Image (cartoon, rainbow, N blue to C red; front, side, top):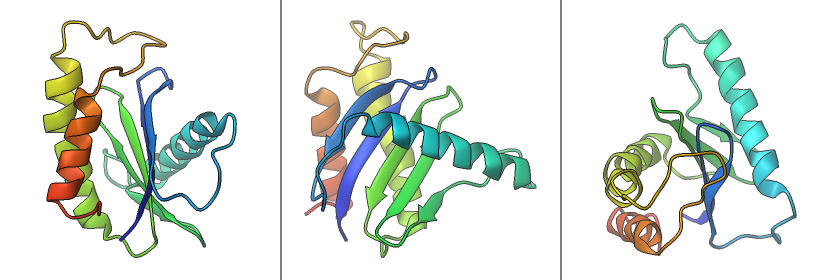
Amino acid sequence: MTLYSIYVFNRYGDTIYTKQWKRTSAVQHGEDGLVAGFVYTLQHISSQLSSTQAGGLRAVHTPLYKVHYLETMTGYRVALFTDKAMNTALVQGILSELMKEVFTRTVTKNPLYRHEKGVLITGSEFEEGLEELFLQRKILA
């Protein structure tokens, strides 16, 4: 199981956090905007075609990787790029835990963080919590 990258977007579509792991290609300028547009478009299409209110996008396979997607009720979105073999149900649980536990503790409850357009996640608490969670759940070696 290999992790390639993670992107966290706020409700305005801004990339507020990104991290790269074992990527097979170099990061391109503007890549985060392309990822945001990609997952937003797929989520929109999925919700239009879904019979449930929550929409249907959880993961997308491509020939080279798999994108796992989670959107919170408050409009925060997470896109995790992994190898194609990664179990979608496992990753959905981990992403949910990431947002409920790590994000809430280190970002939402942080009095210094402003939930406004253009504000990035700074400091090491979120990244350390993310890495710890991924190591505990054995999806990061």
